[in-house]
Length: 119
Image 1 (tube, rainbow, N blue to C red):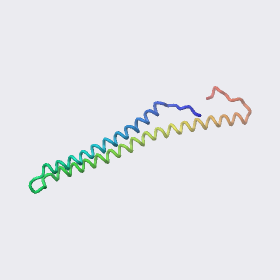
Image 2 (cartoon, helix red, strand yellow; image 1 turned 120 degrees about the vertical axis):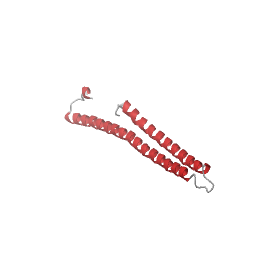
Image 3 (cartoon, one colour; image 1 turned 135 degrees about the vertical axis):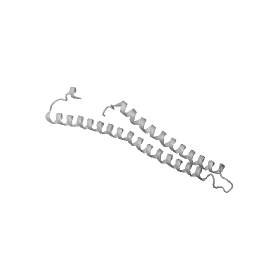
C-alpha cells in the first residue's frame, strides 16, 4: 500500500468542500430571507389599491433568486476545486504505486535484488 503524502493539500481540498457547503447554505438562507422580506414589505407598504408595495416585493424576489443562484454557482465552483485537488492527489498516488510495481517487476525479471535506496 502506498503511503499517504501531501497532508496540507488534503486539508485544503477538504476545506474547499466545507466552504462550498457553507456558501450553499448561506446563499439559500439569504435568498429565502430576501424573498420573504420583499414579500412582507410589499404587504406592509401597499396603498389603498394594493399596488404600492409591488416594487419592494419584486425587488426582494429578484434579489432572493439572485442569491440562490449565486449560492449554487459558488457551491459548484468550490466543491469542484476541492475535488480537483483530490483528483491530482489520487493521480500522484496511482503513479507512485505503478512506478513501485514496475520497478519490482523489472528487478524480478533480471534477478537483481531490490534497491532500497530508490524508494
